[in-house]
Length: 200
Image (cartoon, rainbow, N blue to C red; front, side, top):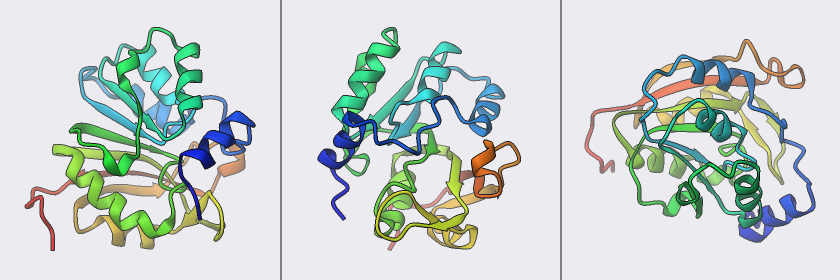
C-alpha cells in the first residue's frame, strides 16, 4: 500500500475525499467546547481540510498545529482560513515530527495509515506529548477495509496498542456521531503515563 504524499495529494486534487464531513464532527466540537485553556499546544495529524483546526482557531486557541502529507490540502486550508498562522501548517510525515504537544486530536488519521503502523502511532504519540498530555478524538469501531483507507478496528484492538503508554480515560461509542457513522465510532481520551520515554 503506497499511502504517501502522492497518494494523498492526488485524493485532494481530484476531490476524492469521501471521508470528509465538510464540517467539524459533533463529538469533537462538544469536546473542544469544554476546553478552557486556549494556550495549550494542539496537534491535528493528517488534518486534511482541518475543520477542527479552523473551529479552534476561531474560538481563540493560539497554539494549534496541523500536519499533513498533502501540500494541496494545506494550501487550500490557508486560503480558506487566511488568519491561521502559516508556520503552524506542517507538510510533514507525522512519524518524523520532532515537537512536543499537550494534546493530539484524532480525526480520521489513525484509520488512514497502514494498520501495521498502529503500534508505532501509539509510541510516537507518547513521545511527542508533554507530561500528562492526552490524545482525544474518534476512531472507527467497525471492520471497514483491508486494502485501502479507511481501515477499521475494534475497541479491544485499540486498547492493546495504547495501554503500554497511556491510561485509558474514556473509550466508548460516540453518542453524537453524524447519522451515517452512528454506532460505528468510538470517542476516546487517553492520557500519557508517567513512565520512562524508552519502552522495550
